[in-house]
Image 1: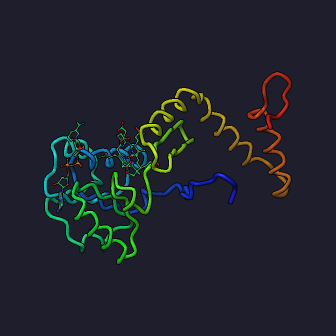
Image 2: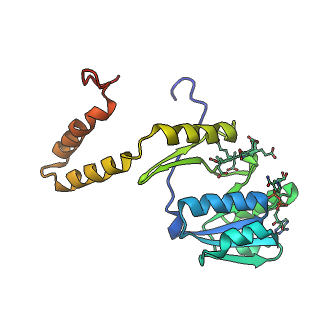
Length: 203
Ligand SMILES: C[C@@]1(CC(=O)O)C2=NC(=C\c3[nH]c(c(CCC(=O)O)c3CC(=O)O)Cc3[nH]c(c(CC(=O)O)c3CCC(=O)O)/C=C3\N/C(=C\2)[C@@H](CCC(=O)O)[C@]3(C)CC(=O)O)/[C@H]1CCC(=O)O
Ligand SMILES: NC(=O)c1ccc[n+]([C@@H]2O[C@H](COP(=O)([O-])OP(=O)(O)OC[C@H]3O[C@@H](n4cnc5c(N)ncnc54)[C@H](O)[C@@H]3O)[C@@H](O)[C@H]2O)c1
């Protein structure tokens, strides 16, 4: 392990729209997590189970026909027909029960705002067209993650999406073996890491 690397989280980008998410709780935190899902992967099938559904939550879900809401208490059977779980029930003993039920059934769970109970964390997300950056502070400070998102949003040019589309077109047109293609694509994109003055790649 490289010296000083204390963050052992392994980042992945899920094709959430091909999955079924169980969201437990439809209050303030539940709404934050629903919004995170809908902002990033709007066609995801989400089953929401909550004893009480807050009006703002209902309103946010209303225009999506892929969100099903069941008004009722949690029961472990709900875990069976889902791929991953996000729990926002605002009740620590219940959250521990849900986490243990998920473990027994081999399902990954995020217990909102409870790092010790999570199998994975949600990240703070920067999107420029096809480009997506996910930021985590290893759970140290979601507020800093949010600020970094704002900084990257400002810093990254909107034209990046055009660059991605252009390079993809060139990639599709390139002939030759794999190594030749890799070389061509690396030459083509060298300018992105040059200092602009003398085209020297930044080390
Ligand atoms: C990134 C983001 C994604 C999302 O949720 O979509 C996210 N939290 C966001 C915002 C945010 N959350 C909180 C505040 C209030 C200020 C503060 O407390 O700092 C703010 C800021 C705000 O809202 O302004 C409260 C909070 N959150 C956690 C704790 C518990 C603790 O820290 O121990 C507490 C205290 C609860 C309490 O005291 O009651 C824990 C987690 N929150 C995480 C993710 C995971 C770690 C991510 C990482 O590795 O950095 C992790 C571990 C688990 C998880 O929930 O997945 C989203 C950014 C949205 C954006 O980009 O705009
Ligand atoms: N900034 C704001 O606008 C605002 C507004 C409200 C609350 N808050 C903050 O948000 C926090 C509370 O939000 P929250 O989302 O954690 O709690 P919450 O009370 O808003 O929501 C909890 C959800 O879990 C559900 N639930 C509880 N037990 C259940 C069970 N056994 N089965 C199924 N569902 C169950 C509830 O019905 C509810 O839908 C507090 O810290 C509060 O200060 C902020």
